[in-house]
Image (tube, rainbow, N blue to C red; front, side):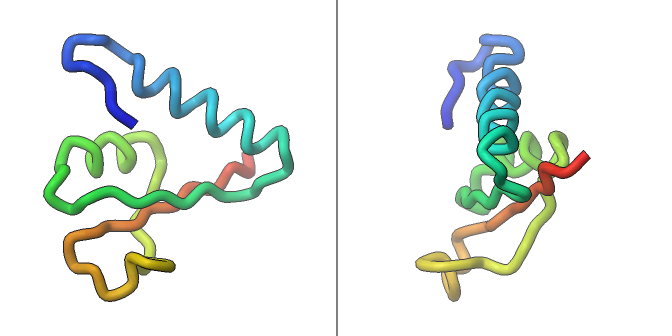
Length: 74
């Protein structure tokens, strides 16, 4: 996901919509990956309740990747 700098709260609006849609489809968690060097993205996701998890799938062993997860349960 990318939002042009200066577009206030667009990223949060998109993320919130995706989380709500996933919850309505019965998902209990969301997992994602971003590059560790992308500090703005990591901070954004952590600010919105995502916590670091062990790298999964093709990201296992990739030290440039960081994986995060968030529970969708209230």
